[in-house]
Image (cartoon, rainbow, N blue to C red; front, side, top):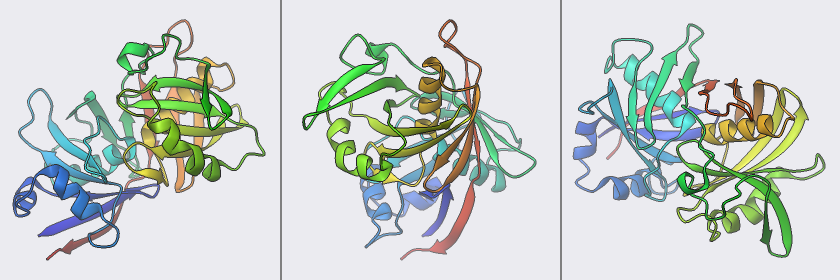
Length: 279
């Protein structure tokens, strides 16, 4: 079976054409767990399978986390997917629509070989995130006797964004508290958790505990959610560089408190690691 490994800022994925997936003789959830296993499989944060028969868009995808759970959206995965389907001529234009569980997403292959993705509008209503408390901004959550003030927002998938002081160790926070917040009662569908340092008004540093994956080197939707929250809090400009453990992405959002329902744009690299035959 032919597999392709790609990554966006270190957030890595196994990509299979649908005919290659059929050779596995298992469901997609089981395939994701098998292929993404870093000891007995290829090793990746997620599995992506293009869907050339998607209705209402140029193409669609099936996306699964490494634990076998289906995810609504993944920004780094979308950049890799866009480059993959364009290079293999599954689409014949540089800007096209993709059907996802989060709705229609529009990526664009740029002249510098990076990929810009229209990640659609942020979701701020608690019931749509979903988030149980009615007040999703500045919510104080107690975790192991520590109070975190965070902000719940969805980019097609739920996020809890926590700005921390400059002296904090982001990976340590994510590792210790990420899994506890992910499964907290406030999030009925679990959540991604972002720990954010404000470097300047146009730059942040970010570490993410991803729902269904754990700590990853990058998270595109997490970068988008963090910038949206920073702008709504009044501490970030509308164009922000986000430094992740695996690299840097650019987030552009011209929304604000008065008009928050504006599209968020994510720009960053998508790179091939290898293509190989898997027995």
